[in-house]
Length: 339
Image (cartoon, rainbow, N blue to C red):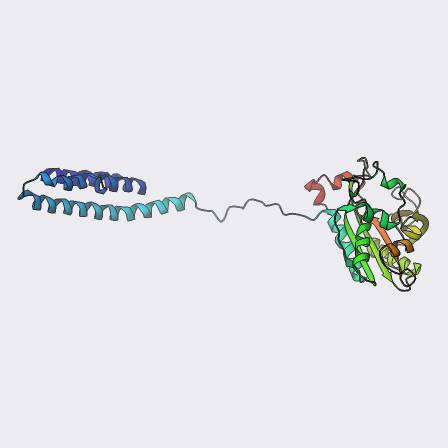
């Protein structure tokens, strides 16, 4: 039994010194010192020894147990340091090596143009108003004085969800919501996505962006409207820009007009960009119809105002000379990074 214990110690030494990893050392600890380990089995079998042998063998077994534990602890520290060193070598970073190139994001040209427009109108005292993209037929048409037989209310032009709910065709419902929830004076711009049942081509898309403006107060005149939009055009396209107002018809404004700006490519002389007319159409506008004011709970005998609306995609295309609306929605980073 005594010889067996010493052989066990020598065998344990060889295996412990030969271990290459901490996991192997833990396996050896279990092999020799665990509940079913070899040293433990020797201690359990001491009942078969004589009374004279038990104290001697028990002492030797405990000494060997302690020797193996000390040996495991000492080797464990060395192996742990070695593994850390190996890991550091494996995970080392050469700080002189160039790093992987990361691609930074970039604002979309529509958002770039929108920021410029926000800056212009906020500087004139306007506030930004928002509303839902799924709107009621009432807010989108009825409250805006659109007759029941107006072509834009047809299925060929508008996306209907139910008989009473649609995807808004304009951001004008934001104006309705504002007039119903706030008392004059009101001075807002209303940006957002709109949806119409259009075929996709170079100038049309079923999803597009609009930004509209609304001013309601006492003694507002057409001169206020013209001055506001003239200032907007000069700030957006350059101080040399001229504006021209042409009569038009919109059900929610009276009188109504469309606004042209002098071509910023040729200065109004005529070129391919302006189709040799010297002018470029940018938006529609007019004085808010009294029916709209009354429908929204505003006394049209006390208050009046003006409204205007423009296609943000069109403004973006004009400002940055983009000739196809489809590239705005293709999300090609090479195109977006140009702006």
